[in-house]
Image (cartoon, rainbow, N blue to C red; front, side):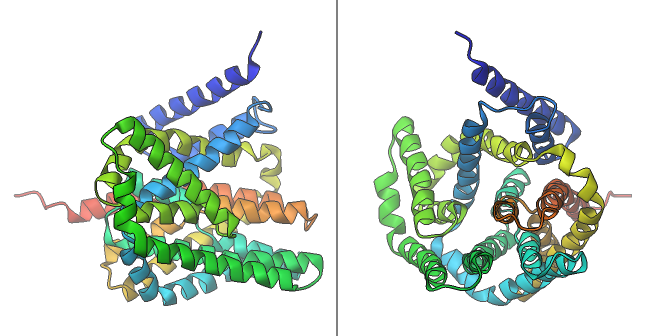
Length: 387
């Protein structure tokens, strides 16, 4: 009996391993290589995969959950809530600076009001998954600016809780009570999860901890995935649910989770980034590439400006502001989801390939810009050689 799906899956994982080695030797982030590998194995690529698609999709979801869960392990609920309170202005600035370019571009290209509103959301949303991977790869997790990046990511997700139901209502022809109810439920869900995180942090961590690595791994992994699922039930993204779940865990449980989950995170994170490319038909990219590149260049500038201004309000140093802006540059899973919603609704046919091109450019540029910023900061902080 032949098992073609296993052969395909094994080929994908070995391909990811090869590009990870290549990236390591070149000293650059592996994320762009994972995306390109996904393009090669995806629909329209060199070796299109069909039978393993469902496993790769689920694996990519687990990868995103683990990326955000482990990032949440670095912070307490009180730290995040305090940063969000101080960063409300930064969230507003982020929305204004990064929504406007996409909205304006949609109107300038003659797509109409509703497609332009979709494109505005696509240019707004930073990729939580890419940002988390950047912070882990460059050892920025405990830096002061990371809390600011997390608070902006959570506020963007709250904005999506309002934005997506409104867009859905517009597609159906107007705002409805059901749509407004979805908005209210999503906001209530995030508030409830944060409140629970403040209340149960110590007791839950004691309950989760075990001296058995096997039991602790299974408990932590199950808890992270379950929390992501509960978040989706209350119309909050699984990514934010996983982030809040990580924030709740502290003490010995958090320390053990970091060590045990790191290999799993790296495996499934690679699958997550490959899946972004896997879902794209490479033939749809070249016609949209030029205009998408121009908008992506604007997107780099607006996210760097967001990090710089928000960091200044938060009292961060210049190098910390640069790191915050660089971590926010990449777009990813949320932007793809918004484009998918538009495509499913039969909206402007040029929107999906344009959005995918835009996301791929910035998903590749974000890690590279972060690495360049990190290297420049390290050089500037290095002691001058003695005469």
